[in-house]
Image 1 (cartoon, one colour):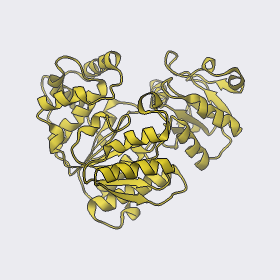
Image 2 (cartoon, helix red, strand yellow; image 1 turned 180 degrees about the vertical axis):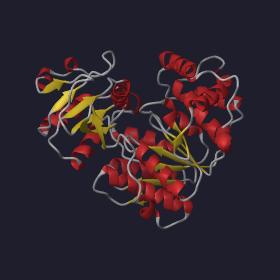
Image 3 (cartoon, helix red, strand yellow; image 1 turned 120 degrees about the vertical axis):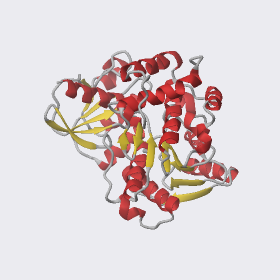
Image 4 (cartoon, one colour; image 1 turned 30 degrees about the horizontal axis):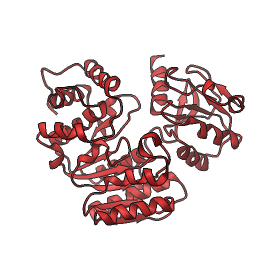
Length: 380
């Protein structure tokens, strides 16, 4: 991608993005984005074959598996995901590799004119940047995951796409609704007219009914992945079906079998030289899925922002006699012992970034928690 001579520095670009976080926060609406897309001559209307992924857990994994599989088949791919673990550039992959920092700034420059009145949120700007990147690079396939929900997520301005719906659980209930049915309706909102839908049969029956109803309303065709024993297998199963249907092939499972999971999905790592595991799951369903697969008695070190409900996660772990350490990695905006009921707090230990860990401990929680761990390790 060409480098603009007038671009902002990467640090200046991030400063401007973070101003939008402070000013706008989360915007679950398409109203402001519509006007900005018009100013940019509707880049969303000229996208290549697009795969749109929604769900509570597993979106990033499915995007990763599909990206790597398509690269093995010599397709050019752009992948747009969120959030990132170490750097914003990780959200924009060209053929599986993050864009350069100067490219990130170029994209920000290119879409800033569509936000003259400073109305857009950070995520809306990033989504416009993703569309701009696709226009510049002209890939064969564009893969994007929703940031929040689906129906009113900024990515849902695309006119046509294959919809993949991963596991659905109770998350962001203050925005998406308090029941699985409510949340499923939001996630299924990415289903387009006469589109192809890929999902699995392990959903709660109420979720399945919602997906069927939304698909019928849109005259869309559902391709079901059969039941799988755990979330990891479900994610790969969804990717296999999507790959086979997208390219009209039958050997997607052979290709997918050779692809390893992305980092942060029950990944082996080290912390201060001690072997450990890391997972960016951040809700009860993710914790249960890991516990089902990884039933070791090692401590879980949990770090979650206050926007997420850490209490059910901690209760689940304690109920299965798993030692829990709680890390208030952002004192102003993450769970601490003081936020727990007394009877739960008495069974949890405090762990601070920089403390020693027991071998094979599992770091579990927010992307931002894992980001903090990696930054601390890098600065040493």
